[in-house]
Amino acid sequence: MFKKNVSAEPQKPVAPQKAADVAKPVETKKEVKPVADKITVGYTHLSGCTGCTVALADNYAGLLTLLDRYVDLKYMPTLADARHIQKVDVSFVEGSVCINDKLAVEEIKETREKSAVVVALGGCACYGNITRFSRGGQQNQPAQEAYLPIGDLIKVDVYIPGCAPSPQLIRNVAVAAYLLLKGSPEQKALATAYLKPLMMAADKGTSACFCDLMTNVINQGLCMGCGSCASACPVRAITHEYGKPQGERDLCIKCGACYNQCPRSWFSFDVVENYEAINETIMAALQ
Amino acid sequence: MGAELGNYKSCVSARSTDKEILKHAQDGGIVSQLFGFALDEGIIDGAIVAANKEFAAKYPSKVMADNSNFDMIEPWRPIPAIVNTRAELIAAAGTKYNVSPNVSMIKEATRSFGLDKVGIVGTPCQMQAIRKIQLYPVGARDVGASIALAVGIFCMENFPYQSILQLVEDHAAMKMESVKKMEIGKGKFWVYGKRGQVVQLPLKVTHKYEQPGCKVCLDYVANLADISTGSVGSPDGWSTVMVRSKIGDSVWAKAMAAGCFETQPIEKVKPGLELVTKLANEKISKNKKNLEERATFGVGKALRNPYI
Image (cartoon, rainbow over all chains, first blue to last red; front, side, top):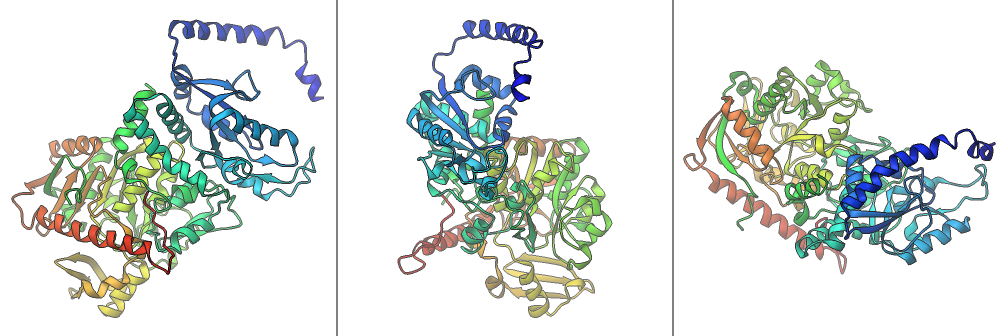
């Protein structure tokens, strides 16, 4: 049934014509203002729900500006024609790896081999997220039951946690990656400082839970009850009891948003004290 | 040394010109007046504040719908709430001296409360939290740009609710529900009763009740707020105000032009910035020492340092 729909003839003449109409002005624009110094970016899609893709697209005009000036999107399912992994500067990876699926394992390895920088995008790629709860048995691949965050198979350079990660964090990391690779020495320093905590998060490990707030913040005598964790939780598993987080652990999907949003998990004065200048730089880059 | 007060564009001693606000305010009514003005002018369309049980009973739709049974909430326990009117602002005015997780509402304010321009008041650590949310919005889609005015309050330390309970009921021997106002000033913790009784506790007594998380805090005057304010440095009934960011500068200038505040130059008032600087230094050097001690806390084992 599915195949039949895809190759349904009557639709064909309409769709390519429309696509050509849209593509033409975009192509001429490209020739008018060529940008030599773009970074090359790829997007590998493994076991994820496409929510991260949607979050990326939700930058709307910002995404178009990124593609126009800074980023040459070499391959990406959904948003680009080319889907197969190529040699790029930065790869974003959405989803965890099903180790029972040969293709997925090959793809993550190939992504690592062909990318200078690998960014784990979203909770599943970083920490396994909801795929941590898989025990297989689902149609139409019941034997696919074992899912690992990509950091368990390859070295990951940068984490963008969150389920889904916010469009603004994806944007900030993309601009920082561009400045790191193509910017002036000052811009490189700024981008390095900005990305450092996300690189440290990638070094730290591949598991996340509400419990991180207990073990790494409250148990360490660091919680001051700001409320960031409750606000960050995508499933509203966190409330506050007398100013301290209380997690409904059965609701926790292990995305790592609460811990990474906590100002007492990691905090860089060098970066955050310059919040006005950094926000202005990013907004100016996207004007 | 030198950086203890953070970056600021201007600093004055100020108080609200609104008599009604002054009647309910902790000191100079700066936060209430600023938010009131910002609401009137459409600079913000709502603000996150620390309200209380009475507020929640009066405005149940303005507090977060969580598992709390509001009948069970104790007097003086703060409840983060959204205010949209001056009446609500006044109902929530005053310092509570225990932890109010105001940042927990920052996303919800832009969701079920439907705000596009959010005001928030908070402690220095909460200002750090919202700037981290703006720069690294891990779980805060479309929230950062909605934060239209962040007002920070000077903060030496905060207390868990149960600490305040113990200080008021055990040390000051007063019932929580009979307390009219609490205050830290002139080196003492003051508890004012509704019948007019006043009890003062030396801060030496309060130290052991402080929240542990405050012992690593390196910010006294909310360096990352748009505007920060606190009683320290200004005469009774006045507040010291530091205008820090471009947003803060613009809002403060508009509020001044509208006659919202009466001001005095900070250089002219006693005790002035000298005391603010002294206390900021005390807090920061004490807590830097705490951070160093954490590095060698165990035998060859360190406690975690959150700062990188």
